[in-house]
Image (cartoon, rainbow, N blue to C red; front, side, top):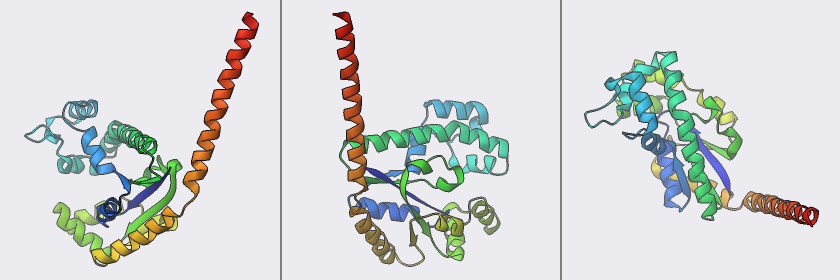
Length: 232
């Protein structure tokens, strides 16, 4: 099995592309969904977040108010670092556990959506291929304003905090332009799926894993045999 990283900019359409992979029967891991589970009321991450930021980041139901939390950490580097220290390791660990579960279920590959894949660099080592989702600058701005109810000034500041899309494109194996309609995006995504399905890397990976497993088994057997011989 291999992992395909899906990334892009804010509001470029990563979720749309991820849903198309799902529709085609591809196993996917959504970082946003994982983050919500990691921060569910009562979890260790939730408790640490509450202890550090206080109840102002919690809603009436006890769940983390992500919009309010974002407002607090956006202009405060130290608080943003603290948030990342609390959440990122747990999110990454949960995502890798899900990936291993898919591997043992027999999936040839999975698509893992990681918005800050290039910015953090933490997950890059595990990615065999990377897809970046882009759209026109004005569309990204409009979509972000509409989705999060941001002013244009706030939306621009949020966008500018991430790596420029052209830099992400330069580091990617595939690019999906989500400037058009959903059918166009679906066509681009399904073309990539065809390429990924032809990849022989999964069999190479399994062969390496099998050889490693055999090496460990034979190594352990040899050690046991030596112990028995010494004892006799």
